[in-house]
Length: 490
Image (tube, rainbow, N blue to C red; front, side, top):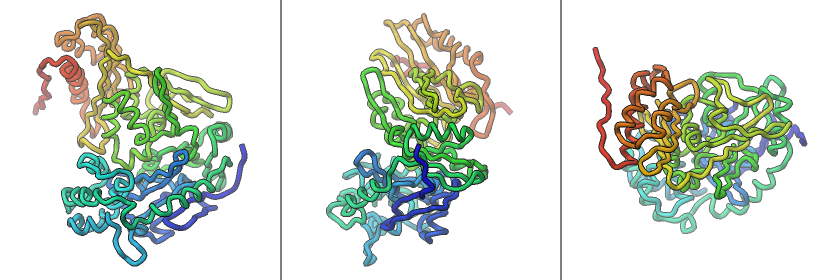
């Protein structure tokens, strides 16, 4: 491992930045507003929910330059090495002429108080750069992570529809003509050296490769690893936790690969939800629909499936479908690699089968046999951009009408993501009919003892889990069935 005192180097709008002193917990939003006085980027929630802080971050994906919307309020400055940060101040021409996206917001009255407007503009700008003539579904998906308190969304959607018909190469744009130059500048910033900044009290580390990461973790086994920061960012902004030393791994190319074979797909630990969406949707459509509801677009552009697994949260959305699909996780350290079934990785609340010095390197998801039935359901208070009260994944194989195998996993029902072993046993070897399903519902109490919290009561979670099994049966059999209703007694 080559070490360098070095600096965090990136491009901010049109200027090269080199930071030799960076707090491991410093956020991009504070850097923009307090140090660079770029105050168009707003702070609303400081937890990646409202979108007022949205900026674009350009990164190299192989030889391609990709721009994505991100939440500056939970994006660590230390994670920006070899990237291009674009803020609202960079969109208008030097003579003051508004960018077409900005002008459309004016023309269609998409702003009132204006506080959220820069975030909306940056989200729409990211869509405008990446998709020709987007439809309403594309626009609504793009805006999942942006909240407005006074305008209402219809004028904003109309502005997006209007500007979507204008292509970047036909109008003024600050990024199109300089794309080749930006790409060359970012390539020059990339290297295999491990960047170390600060002392033991506040240390920031950026490994240049997966092998370098293994060596760093061997030296700092208690370090906090940060990929997308959609969880860790809130540890800092909301819980005020000390997390030093911090290792930023989002720039390690080897962890950002996703490979497809006949046997299945291998997802590198650094692959974001957005990057994995197309392939997962094609191979496991129900899983893809779940990813569409995981956070907003900014969160999906930052967060990683590997991070969602590594954290071991009992309400993480990806572990239930991954367990139902019989996924395995490969762990790596300086001593080598080992692979374990994903369901065995989760031991108990706050404890995973990850030894000191190990990190999640990749996740393998086997192909779904053609005859298997598979679906995923998320229950939350809001449909979009909300944490699950519970998430259930169901997979069965049939021989005629006979259930030959079953894998059912839930998040939000126990201290870890967990299979419903007794429910599975109640299904296997029996006919796939309402009578079997109703009988199997009674086995949920043997598998789970859910908690009551502000998202849902234990009774609601249990009843919802039972009804999700019934819903899975109805959707896969074409039959009708009556759901058990939740009654509140005084």
